[in-house]
Image (cartoon, rainbow, N blue to C red):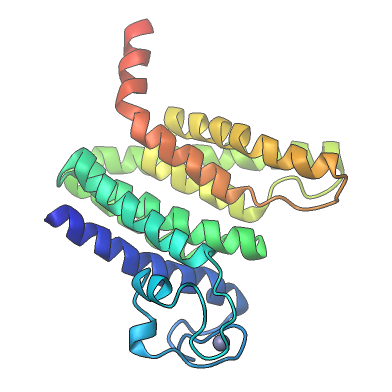
Length: 250
Ligand SMILES: [Zn+2]
């Protein structure tokens, strides 16, 4: 029952995160104007705003102009619902449960804003960082909190040096500021070792996508954030396995 409830909350939050990811980079308010059809600008009524359900009932089309509503919207909502439900299914009410909710939420917002505008927003990053640090403090105490802060600092220094070297070698902006700030959040949430693993896995995941654009020889900036976040989520899900393994061999 609680699982279904979390799934529904996830649908609603997914819809909200989409609005944040689409509007905030353009400096638009997330409250007004009310949501509208991108094509005919018709303001949506409350029953047209129900995540997923409205899209299914209206068969993916605007009720007025019948233009297609991107399938991207219900997919993002479904994904958020799924991740929220999965957090509880895997961890029950625990530190990991809350941490996974935070990571999933940030993942969705970055997925939208980075793919659409190549932007990683500061505010969601700051809110997520504060939430995860508070969570660490309340579950594990001051020592863990301070260690997490320090890990964030180490990640920042590491990414900053990589950027300096990259800029020199490639003679252009090699790493976006957003990616560096994202790595700081990794440090807060996962500590140093698992953050590095996330960065490596994220880069690995981004590689086929980047390669595709190199082959098409398009000078295109690649949204790196979503891949880093997916890498992070995977490492987070596997962390107890990884930690056991490291303790086993070292
Ligand atoms: Zn319309």
